[in-house]
Image (cartoon, rainbow, N blue to C red):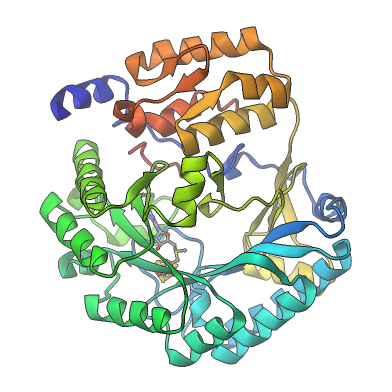
Length: 453
Ligand SMILES: C[S@@+](CC[C@H](N)C(=O)[O-])C[C@H]1O[C@@H](n2cnc3c(N)ncnc32)[C@H](O)[C@@H]1O
Ligand code: SF4
């Protein structure tokens, strides 16, 4: 069965394609300099007073720089640049206060990076207080933080728990020591388990973990062992990302010999091995690369069809606006996307001169929102309904039917067009990003996109 499906996937180009992960449409490489701080201020000002928004704070520093990591972050052994960065972030938050309408509250607050947990405990308290003075958390809000188990201690966890963190996201990647050595990320099972226990001891209700498939020298046996070890920690939610090897963008990855990487067909087998183990343990599949306990809020949203996709991946956040602060962060508004200057120096200079550092973005026009909806629906639900597109976007039914017909033909039985709309059956799900890319009106062959599986 696997062989038959694999040969069809090969014919359809799965193992050669490089496609975006569609955490936005258009994707960030398509942004231009047509959006600036004026747009950003206008879009903030258009939020309705008393509305709920979400806030992402980016901390682009790490104590160690793992070779596999493609995130934009800088290594530091000193606190000085980190504390200077936090002061600038507080100045940016003060500018946000001045630009936001009255009474706005937060439906989600996320601290990501890099490694936000390298902040000293006092700086964490100070940053949380600055945020909540401007935009308090609304009832049932979620405050999540990315935690490197190697870069956390009791004092910092106390500070985060007191500030109201109720979801922690830990980076695991793989537990195998040989793989850890080759990807430049050492982290024993004991360290990870101690972090998980310390997080739970503070009453933090939900725990996410990131794990990778497609790593150098990874075999099905080794990945099974890692997944079993992860399952012994009972995470509520797991992201199983495909390792993206993009050394032309993330230069640290040049440390990883490319001849140790599994072939694309092997990557698919690795994914399916892990997927099976999660399912045997009672986790449900969510979207293309997540697994969760059935009572997890994302699993419930996926079941109800209310799950969405944003820059952090899958979310059940209902807010229409996501504001990103910090260097390189991206905001989403009903009007479009706005990105801050990627370099910390350029971002700091702008904020210190009293202006937001928005340098790029995209203002929605034409069919952008319609296509964004199709892509988001395929990535979240593996299905898009024609009626909804006609109703919500005044899409032309004949045009939609023709488009869905041609995609269904291209992907044979692995994308199905019916009177209801377009759907992707289980056998076609490895192709989801490629099928979604059929609706991307912008050029997609840009570097930085990872392989389709
Ligand atoms: C911004 S990192 C933050 C995690 C935190 N600093 C840590 O190390 O635990 C978020 C996640 O991105 C994922 N990631 C980083 N580089 C990746 C790559 N090249 N391919 C796929 N996923 C990657 C990793 O799973 C990582 O846990
Ligand atoms: S994986 Fe985490 S700690 Fe390692 S370089 Fe990336 S962001 Fe930093």
